[in-house]
Length: 211
Image (cartoon, rainbow, N blue to C red; front, side, top):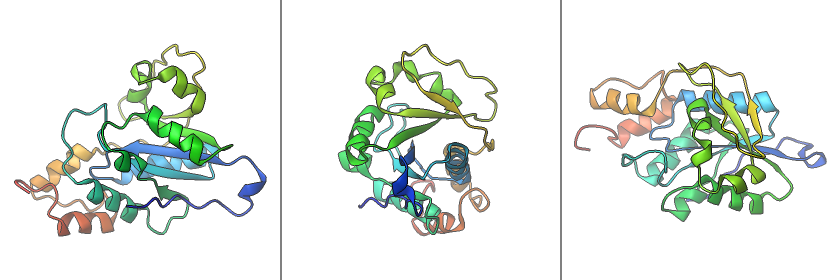
């Protein structure tokens, strides 16, 4: 598996590069993820945004259904043709629990001098104080908060040095768990995921009972 980072626009070398990152299980990736990425990129004027599939999320107890290679391929298919977006497989290559601070340390080494922005939802903002090495993490990266459906407000934990940006975005009530359930019930995924992702899930027999 290889990284395919998003392309920088012409002339990006003349200003500080601003890169966003959206982590997640992406089991599967769906249109809600893509809208979040686009809203963050446009709302903050980012040069690009890279998706980072997690190996094992510390926030989710369930076992992932799709393999790392399948989840990476679904992200690749979802963003294919959009040069604003890319994929980084560093968490999948590292394996184990995917702690954001470990990832951001590596991103800082990979993109020296760039401004780094980590995109997260309202529910995650309220849990930030419990993230691993949060004191170091807030010094390395700025956070981008996009509201999620049903969560109008957000309680920001008192973390010294926290840089949190709120970006107005589209609220789309789609969840990966809902989509896995749809497939298990024999319902189509079209209009919830990009067509190529829906075709890939079908071809791999993903999320079907006993698959």
